[in-house]
Amino acid sequence: MLEGVIIKEIEFSSEQYKTALEIRNQVLRKPHGLSIYEENLTTDAKSIHISAYYDNEMIGTLVMTEINEEKIKMRQVAVEPKYREQNVGKQLVLYAEDFARAIGYKKIVLHAREESVGFYERLGYTKLGSSFIEVTIPHYKMEKALT
Image (cartoon, rainbow, N blue to C red; front, side, top):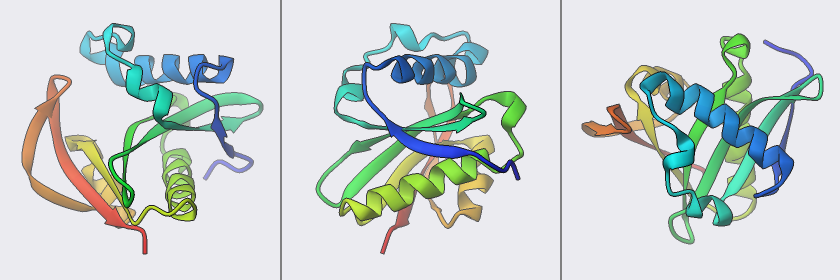
């Protein structure tokens, strides 16, 4: 486990947001021949942005977007490749869960890439239904109660 990781909320449209957007693009879109900059990012303006830092460098990020008063969607969880397998993703998700719980949400939902399902299951998420294609690759709907 990587010690000394700092996780915090960042502001939309800040320099930190631009860095997070680039991490999301490099990790989640570019490997599939896509660009996040060609997507509609309007929901980012009303979302919660959380990032992980190590040695003052952003190394991971995620976004949470409200679905309704009780449910929030976690999306675009991305960790820089050289920091994977060091529990950075786990720390980000656990922080996001605590954050969501503290502001009153009862459930987190997400669309997990097929290869990430085990990661989320180890954190208590339940897979719902069969796979579907999103951004050209198989995903599963998953959820976790925060109570």
